[in-house]
Image (cartoon, rainbow, N blue to C red; front, top):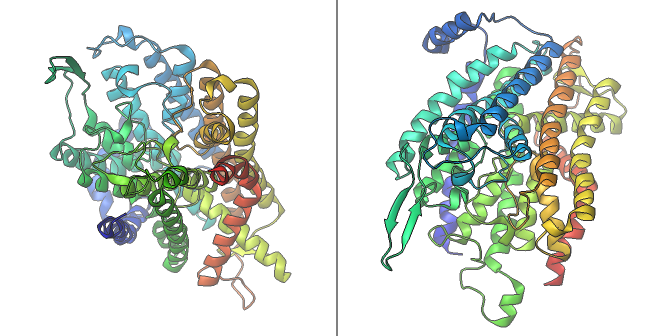
Length: 556
């Protein structure tokens, strides 16, 4: 690993840090129901949408907000499923792509609407242009908008302002955040050489005289929302490892910045909305610290390479280059694997299955924790959940009723949080055990690595990430149905339970801060928060990691 590689990573993180606060303040203004300058810019379009739909911007209870979220998303899943099932008979299908098989359509429809984009098909051959450019791109806008709306409702609930209105938040997320940034980003990607066309695949004659089919399509527009919305699904089968989706180091930089743009800004939006930017800064620094540590571990392991090859004296001088693009190198590949799982995007520019055991454990740990910035909105709600746990445990240790933002945290809230905490390990560990017992033939590697392959797949599904250890033979009915169920439950159960937590806290009368109140805007709270995240994560998943990547590392 060269010094220039480290400098490029440091510069990327610095740009992301500099963007976080202004973008966070913009988000807070964008979702403020009061009068502001953004209303003059976006208000006419939004009022037109309201008029066409017959919608009124009225405050909802947390139950109404949750019902609107879940039901509207379920209807959209059905719409995506139907288009995928009948895409073979629909227009904009120059390659003649067939109707998608039922279990695969079930998996894909849930996957894209759950902000996961786990693809059990090859991007360029599994779906038609119509499916790519309409229902899948539609899902890639609506699913992150749903997550962003959830985050805003949760923050309002914590500050005692009520949940707001789901449809108003959804429309604002689309008109004020996702559509403008995605439009500009798509133009930048076209400038960098990413194709944007509805022409069918090109046929070229190689220097050897052979015929080669080159896939293309409306890739730039797909790529922009794929990264910005923390979606991650690839237009092409190899995702951002393909030169059409990621032609250069500059496009790689833009993709990383887009993945972090909203997720890293949400702590500052939270601080602004609750009236304490220091609180947001503490959470931002805590998450940034975890991200830097994860990046350091990944870079060190991937630069050291495979111990077996090192002992044979045939290790690549730049580290482990297996499964990586030469034009990007092992440093940017390892860094990308950390960012895509820290931001719960799921895009890949390298084969995660070929990472070193510890290098592969880092993205796995990011998804299990789901708090190292986390995905679009939902990840930050998980961060606030861990902040509530940190306050609760700190209060118990000093014998004082815990309070967060002036509201007491009591048994009802902690029961809901406990249910939320148990859902993810249940959805990961139980299906992994079933898969290992019933479908060993679909796992390409025996032993510890094979366990990691199955564990990674269900972790990616439960965390709404979408990346995978692609040595796994997941294009089967079992994997389609099982991961589809995990993706749906992993997304929507936690949304409902955490909205219930916010609703419960919003209904309580604020308690004035006193000398014994545990402050949540200090470095001490940041340290407690990080400690709680790591301890809970270790207690939940460490045994599985020992049986998978750690055991594999020890056998090399």
